[in-house]
Amino acid sequence: MSYSDKVIDHYNNPRNVGSMDKSSADVGTGLVGAPECGDVMKLQIKVNRETNVIEEARFKTFGCGSAIASSSLATEWVKGKTVDEALTIKNMDIVKELSLPPVKIHCSVLAEDAIRAAIGDWKKKQESAKPVASAVAQ
Amino acid sequence: MTNSSLTTITAKAAPEETQSCWSCGTMRAVHFCAACGKVQPPVPVDYFTFFGLPRKLNLDISRLEKDFYELSRKLHPDLSARASSQEQEWSLQQSSLLNDAHRTLKDPIRRTQYLLQLEGVELEEQSKTATEQARSAGELKKQIVPPDLLEEVFELNMQLEELRMHKKMGEDDPALIEEIGRQKLELEEKQEALLRELKDHWETWDGMIQRQQNGQPVSEEERKQERGKLVDLLNRRNYIRNLVRDVSEVLEN
Image (cartoon, rainbow over all chains, first blue to last red; front, side, top):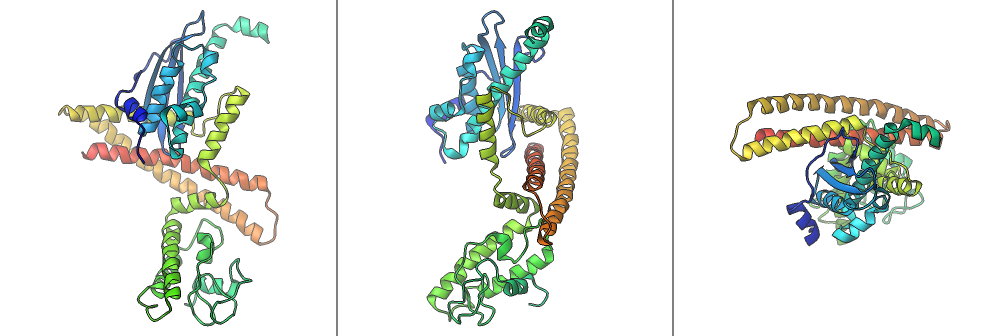
């Protein structure tokens, strides 16, 4: 199996590798895994509280080239999007963009899971940050 | 071939019991005709059936080995040199099936994976479906692997990466090497423990299959639950296995 040029590019020059402060109220962290192959992927987002726009994204992935490329692309895509917009990213969009072969679709699934997990973590932090508002909403 | 499970096959004549031997017309077994001893054309059977075994996870390895060698000998191309070219081709195909079946069944992990596959468990497909469901429901997907294990896997990978970097730079880091060496021991213990846990679940699984064979009903719900536990254990084990492999690699180089 050969990797597409885009996968190789992301693999050789991964975008947004690194981490942000997990405990920060503006940062959401998603840590997900694909047990079939033993990959782990961590994706973090930093969200502007006023606009809900994702201003920063970081990732660190231990896995194959396709998993690294999928998460690298995911960070590129979520940046500049609002949280709700980022939730519309589907794994098949990643498959198309990177021309992933069927055996590597699970890498794109992992990337989508990571985005959702990061946003979920951030949302949870926002809810617990304003207990009064959420109590009213209920 | 007394006391061999192959005799059981002949007696029970697997799923294709309606078929008969191409040569003498009597009822045939999976590989050889019990009556005339002629090799039979391969039929699509699962590996358990091929060896005349029930779909249980505990199996008598010494008997499996014995049956394997006996069949290997009988299916050896040299022995069938005087047979027709059609029979030789069947022998070859049966041989290859035999090797695959043997390799899969003798290994505890592969055997469990194979059984789950027969039970219709598709890990990747399940994961993809779960993601799609979470997407449409706007909910978070439940991770199959416990978060603390993921955390541990991630942290250890970070340390391994650090150690690789140090080695690349030609630096020595005895403290880190010692720390990783200690973790390697822990991981190996964990791997052992998981295997023991897996074997406990084999017992439960086999008990369930036995009950079914005895004519007692087994609900699909129970079967599904047991499958789920086996899948969960295999998943956890995959991570640990990968880590043990990576840690050993870094420490040895």
